[in-house]
Length: 424
Image 1: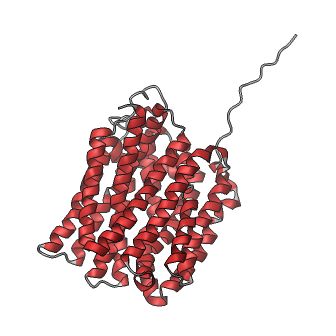
Image 2 (image 1 turned 90 degrees about the vertical axis):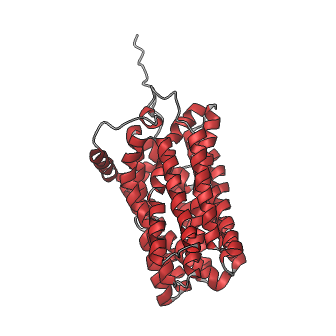
Image 3 (image 1 turned 60 degrees about the horizontal axis):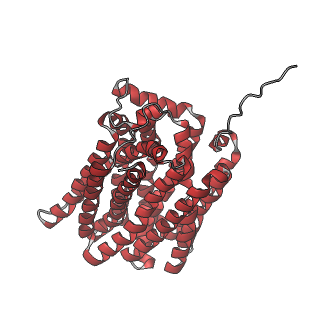
């Protein structure tokens, strides 16, 4: 396979793997509700699904660098598929108690972030070999994640409505197995990077020179000392907490109460994912021409505001679909901007562990978001909780306008060649 084909294969693996994750996020809340669970139980399940991502990020990144990036991607998907397949098998045979569901959801999510970090580390080398600009490659990688939402959310909603949540989880296991097979057969790291800056990151056999715990500590120190990444982790931690409250707990409850159930939830989430996919693809072709910081702020505000305001006002499905489309288009530019900045600022030899740490820090609020949303929904109601979330989200996403280290987001100015003075 040529370089472009290997890059497309990597993107295909990302789409299929993330589609399995999206179907899982739709199926698990309804699996809890189907067995008589409450809003609090849904929040607890969301907590169990996201805590392992926070744990797997910092400890899995350094492990990925030892195991190899392709092998890590394959292993991650195999573990996720096996644990999710165990849920319907238990439910249809000896029974699936709530604690067992939580344990399987926990194990399923433990390797998600290391697997994605491995694929992200492979991206710049493959993009360079294929002659694709970095920002465009990152945009396509993020678009592949958005495409998985476009495919997985409606598919999950239809599967849950037509066959039940357990049948939907069987489909997730198939998706993860397919992603593992594609990665094992088609994905190979760029082979022409031996002399480049990405040599360590491009080779699946590159081994760190320090011990495992020293590698983790080195990555942690890098994240803490970099002024830009400190701000990014804080911002994304808060917004992801609020997004988790919306997507894992509040939206399923709102779909049951107002929109008409799992199928409507799938269409709303799929509309957001489809618009975000289009936004990511389109932004990839103009990203190198627009200022990063102001674009990031405007799109971040729009990514949350409309899709949170509509349920806060108690509006129906047509309004939700329109708001999700607008928010999705805006959200499509966020990860391409951050992804390009990360690849510019992180040394190639430590990308896997830093990606894991950044992901863990960004995801740290997600378990708490789903859990708190469940309590808030039972205490003050779903609409009032949506209202509080939209206010907090809007205020937080304006933070990059304050300047300071946020200015480091802008792309570095090209170096000018020294001008030689001519003397006579």
